[in-house]
Length: 292
Ligand SMILES: Nc1ncnc2c1ncn2[C@@H]1O[C@H](COP(=O)(O)OP(=O)(O)OP(=O)(O)O)[C@@H](O)[C@H]1O
Ligand SMILES: O=P(O)(O)OC[C@H]1O[C@H](OP(=O)(O)OP(=O)(O)O)[C@H](O)[C@@H]1O
Ligand SMILES: [Mg+2]
Image 1 (spheres, rainbow, N blue to C red):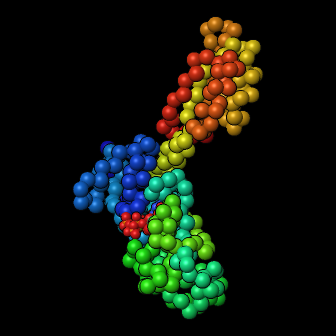
Image 2 (image 1 turned 135 degrees about the vertical axis):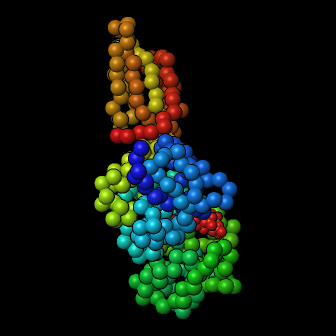
Image 3 (image 1 turned 30 degrees about the vertical axis):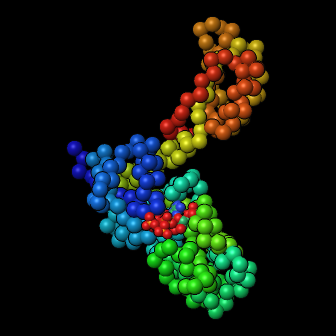
C-alpha cells in the first residue's frame, strides 16, 4: 500500500458544489457531509480539506496543503508565490470566467474611475482594488467589505468592486458597471516544494489532466452513424472540420461507419442534414472525458 498522500484543498463557498461535481466527472467522488471540514474522497492517495477560497493560497504557500483549487483573484490578492498548475474555467453557475467590476448606483453621475476621486470604495478584494486606483492615480478610500457588498451604495459607499458572474446581483441592486478590474478563473495551484516532489507532481498532474478532460467533455457529444460509401464525402462535408472523424469499414463492404465528436449545440442543426445526405443509424451519446 502506498504511504504517499496528497493534501488537497477544496474551496468552501461559491465554488464548492461546482468543484465536487467536476471531481465526480473526472473520476473522484468527494463526500462533504454535514459540518465536517474533512470531506472523504475515494482515493487513498488524497486527503481533502475544505478551505475558504480566500485562504487557499496562504495554506498552499505554507505547505499545509500540497495543492488546492481557488480563483486566481484570491491568489493575486494574497500576493503569495504558488505554482499555478492549470486553469480550470468554471464558476459557481457556469463554465465561464467571473469578472471583478467597478460598479456605481445606476442613477449616480459617475462614468469612469477618475470620477471617484476622494470617494469610498467597498470591496472584499482590497489589494487588487487599491492597485487599480493607484495605477490610475485616482486617490480613493478602499474599505474592506465582509460581503453583501452590493447593498452598500449609496449609503455606505460611493462605489464597489465586486465579483459578478450572471450580473443578476448587480441588476437587483440597481448598480451600473463602469469598468472591469480583472477577470478570474479557477486554478489548480500547488505548493512549490510539493510540486518539486516527483510523486506529488505526478499525482497533481494526473488530477489536472483528468479535471481538464472532464471540463473539455462538457458541452460536447459523440455522434456515430452509418453511410453508404457513395455518400461519405457529403456526410464528411457536413461534419465540422475541427475533429477529423473516424471512418471504419462495416461488414457490408459498400457501407462504412463514421464516429466523431461535436459541440452539443450544433447537433440539432447537423443531424437533419446528415439524415438528408443519406446517413442512417445516427446515435448521439454523452461524453465523460475528452483528452486530445
Ligand atoms: N458566482 C460567483 N460568485 C462569487 N464568486 C464566484 C462565483 N463564481 C466563481 N466564484 C469564485 O469563487 C471564489 C469565491 O468563493 P468564496 O467561497 O471565497 O466566497 P463567497 O462567494 O463569498 O462564498 P460564500 O458567499 O458562499 O460565503 C472566488 O475565487 C470567485 O472568483
Ligand atoms: O453576478 P451574479 O451571478 O449575481 O453573482 C455574483 C454574486 O454572487 C456572489 O455572492 P454570494 O452568493 O456568494 O453571496 P455573498 O454576498 O454572501 O457573498 C458574489 O459575491 C456576488 O454577490
Ligand atoms: Mg459570496
